[in-house]
Length: 216
Image 1 (cartoon, helix red, strand yellow):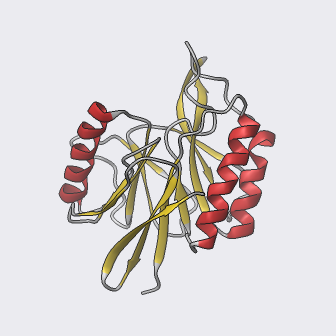
Image 2 (cartoon, rainbow, N blue to C red; image 1 turned 90 degrees about the horizontal axis):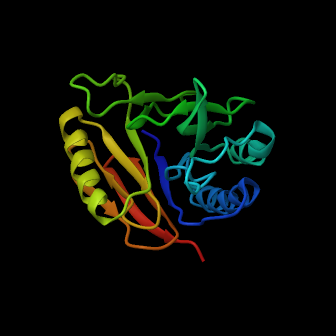
């Protein structure tokens, strides 16, 4: 089988505008492309930040167009966090940038998303469900988070159990620290400490291998 290279962007920046966040995202995409990654996952609300009292307004497609162009130029799929408006209310969501489409796809964040290598869409998953709607062909479950130490410990325990129970690799992109990758047996492959970096995973004949790439 050919190798499948993925990465979590451990992204901590809090910029004053979406345009500044987009520029920062492009740095990570450039590095992921140098690492020959086919998939890059950012943390929760990475494109907007969490806001002050309320969630920020959703960015429009024009603001996000540099990320779509980068995904197409580098042939890389990118999942980033943003806000959505649903029934008049702002909520956390995901943006999917894929080289196969000329539009940005937006999804509610849910508990995470599953995907099949080379596919053009995400399946949003509720990990609390007794029967999550995992596609049997899905190879990876992604989780975009921005949690501190206490919630981080709970999250990694939940994700490790999920990987083992459903025999699917899990990639967690967390803001600031603690991003991680588990294989389909629930074994930890690689976990990051603090700082801005790429946590990479590569799936080949011998299974998953992981690495940490600091962003200078």
